[in-house]
Length: 284
Length: 284
Image (cartoon, rainbow over all chains, first blue to last red; front, side):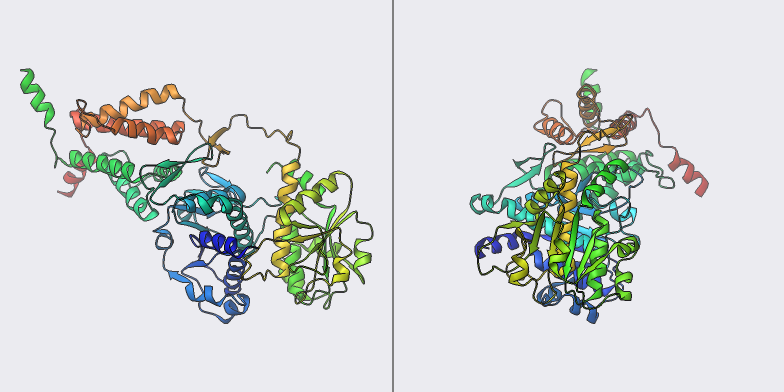
């Protein structure tokens, strides 16, 4: 392959991180690193790994030692994805409520479009035995699945990472030639329902910002007694699903948070309506 | 997945065998079996394996024991492929003379076309350390490559088999009769950013409903003096753009309109908080 093209593809893939949550077997981390490096990815984030470091990681990652040095270890999934704009949670099972689900191929294509729009992407993989929890999956914009034999759907985590990294490279190769000459510096892109992106006036917010958005929305709903914190039922999940699907831009984000704050102030009596009084007096 | 479709796909894949030549590590055979079964393939042929049988094979092939029983052991590659119509030899290196080379995706598509034409197909994988010999590669109709990072192209044989089997399944799914009309009665579809639809638990609302949603949202913003009706600026437009971008489902729609109504009642004093008073009195 043309070394420039190879380099261009690998550079794009730097913006897509693989996140492994609570991994038990060091061999799976080593295999993941090898799968990543083979396909040109470089950033692995481990969320509270059970065993780390371990010689099996180095053994299985044969030759991918530069990636080992770049591994990032964090305590929570929130930390792992805080600066990401688009997060995919991998899931084999169906969940309480349907979440936007993409097969790995369109998910990879969407990831590369996000990278072209200067976004950071995370693909999150769960525990060997039981995957990601519902709470972890609710942190994702989309769920990602790999089409498997439904009579035997037990792809292990290293195999799943191999397939995902392969599709990411294929997606990067597909768009590579075009990306060489489009200069999208200082511009933003918004994914649309028809699969297209368009130039946007405002950047898309990060997951760290959304982690402040959701509690704010929920607290506002509690303040107006729309949400019972003792018995929230599916309401918080539905809100995460709705706004995760939408990907808010910065202006929309601040607009909505401004509305929440105003409603909270109103409900606490710390803010009083002015215009109404004014109008009533002027009517009189 | 629809069980009939799954079965139809697996039936096609029965006509594509994986052939491993002179494999040294039993773990690679076990991983290959697992990769195969996950993707719906069932026929593995081992050409003069170095170590067979071995407990590592069973350990790695967890749950794919039916495939172990079907393994065929032969002495030469010629025997392994004698009844095949189309043979792919996997190769990372370029060879003495140019051979027709296909990337794994078109190779998988071509394999499935061959199966539809009642042909038998073999995909041949070489030794862990040095792949297939020139003589072995010369037995193939085509060489198959997997696009990898050219700075680190060391996919191991189990990973390569995983990627190949995944592409074979994807190709089989692509050509599977579209007529397997999935019964979506009483189900709903949600359009996604990539242009696909997914099954959803609630129907998407109509534009007619949204024409009631926007004025409601705006009136609520006026009521809390967040929006000045005399000088709305871009706010109403941004709200339409935001909620128009991602279609609301019925539950989300009613949830948000319920919030608007509650906020309006609060702002007009027609609704009073209860729990707070209740709590305060019970605290006292």
